[in-house]
Amino acid sequence: MEFTEKEISPLASLDVWEDDVLERYPEPNQPAKAKEEFRNYTDSDRQNTVREFYRLNHTYQTYDFVKQKQAKFLKFDKKEMNIWEAFNFLNTLVDDSDPDTELDQFQHLLQTSEAIRLDGHPDWFVLTGLLHDMGKVLCLFGEPQWAVVGDTFPVGCKHSDKIVFPEFFEANPDSKDERYNTKYGVYEPNCGLRNVDMSWGHDEYIYQLVKDHLPEEALYPLRYHSFYSQHREHAYEHLMDAHDHEMFKWVDKFNPYDLYTKAPVKPNWEEIKPYYENLLAKYLPATLKF
Image (tube, rainbow, N blue to C red; front, side, top):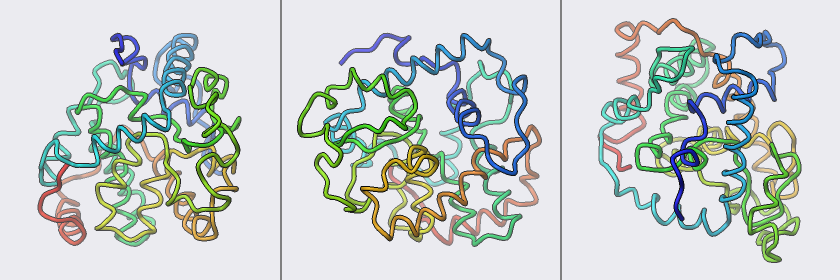
């Protein structure tokens, strides 16, 4: 399948998607972000790029597409790095077109993890904050934006109308396929999300990358932090089991730290570096295969 440059990069910055999430789902008890505080694109331009992004995402994220991406990327044969090399690699995603911040990808991760740490949460939850967007390295392996970020959703069953821009699923071949267009599709009622394939992106990739190294309470936020149609709209209760509901308490706890901790001031890295060096050494091997 060939894509034009416009199709590959409909967003001026990956952060445009997160701004859109903030507008759709303002967090209770958080100060509202003024319209002028969002990245300085005209309203019509930003709306159009977000719509185009989701048109591509909803059209091409099929059950077969996800299976193909799993087969391609879950071999983890693209690059081997220690975690610090991985952070430096991720930092090459800094987008000069982003008018609001000069902070690199690592600084966003660090702001998230520091907010979690300062609130006294367990160290594995701090590490969740530090790692949650590491899966965006998929962009550096040639993946288009719509297969890296965006609201995630189950594939292999009917698309919920609670997913953003549900009308774009009309062009998705699965919506016409009797195997996939019913309420349960290829799944059983309350089968548990561990048995459900999600649309492909950075959430699933980072989960698969570190699933053998972190506790399950950390893995759920990594895997489902972009699954807004469930943790905000409760659209997929019919696929979840009791264990999912218990673990989603950690997803709900994590998301405000992801969305509401961005600030122009960098954490003092020299002061906190020893803590993070010890934290990473505690949970992760010396090198990771991406």
